[in-house]
Image 1: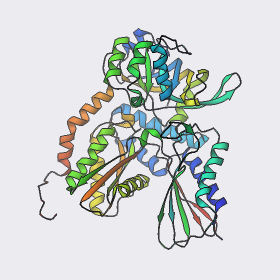
Image 2: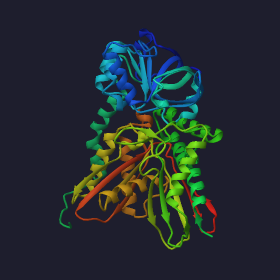
Image 3: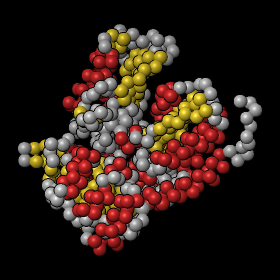
Image 4: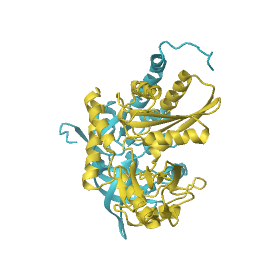
Length: 213
Length: 289
């Protein structure tokens, strides 16, 4: 989608940029991020950081995305990109608060959002969550210039830490801001509030006719 | 003539490949309708991006999604169909050939649930379910690879002598629990009654029904419309970031059962991967979707 008026942001975000973003802002991303979809990867990240070891790719203050990356493998590292696509972030909810705080991430993203504990960690350090459109790999992949590095090659490709260079990636939506607000939380609260009405509207004249059963 | 090992191997591999690069025509039609009715600007933007991306994938042969899912086939077997060779093995070998040759390459998704080890093959892979249909001379094959985003929210509850209102409440609560996590706008398949396994199968079958086809029983068709409106009032919207397009359709199938009533709900994400072909005894392959 060509929307020339969209704000473009360069990763890693400055804290100022991160804190300037509001829920629902639609932006395009440039710059560097690290992406993975691996549960074992993120468990290993938490474990490494817990014993004071640094991670093999630069991530402090950086952008860390829940996104699968497929690329050509060469003897010298990642070759040309095949495709990318986000995965569901909420399944990493138990690991993300620790990663957000320890690495002081300025941006994270994927699809499906993160829970309250992550939202609070993001608020503390000044980090936003970008929602990417899942299943739109054909267009989304165009915003990835190259896979510039990868680490933990003992893992399968999409589980590795894959460093990507973005160029007009998106549009992406700010779905959790750096001030404790989450679109996912708001929508779930609204949906729960609407449920009694919705249920009532299904059978407005429903009685308790048990006689025929 | 007969439906041979070679033919089934080739057709099942092709069905998988095709399903990765294009969305069903009935899904495209729903996107166009939603673009006219969705009122949230951001949701409209997301819908347009999805449709554009799907069209780009189809035109250029790119994948819709990086998650190619796990291979899943539904076989409907006519009693007049004549098969030659190991048809089950043909599907296994077709998938093995596909992962060796497909471009761009697939990532590894087939996971051993006990060890979390990932590869391209595993116990019971590809998943195949069979059903006998009437006295026809063909094998009808649907391929619907299942990815993680949509697959993980499927759920089943067993109610005891429920009223229709209680069944509908149960369905909506299972839908609410999934929120907007499954890459909406989704198709929601509901299976009611029978036994635990049968309700799950009905739910899966319901997700495979093209949009625009209603359940032939008026009472069920009305329930489908009612629940589709109800789900869209929840407000999760495309990709779960707000809007009135959370589902393109709630599809319901039911079976008679006893006083206990399993209610199964499952989802297919917006790309709604589904392809289908018939192989006739004559060797003719008829591509349906």
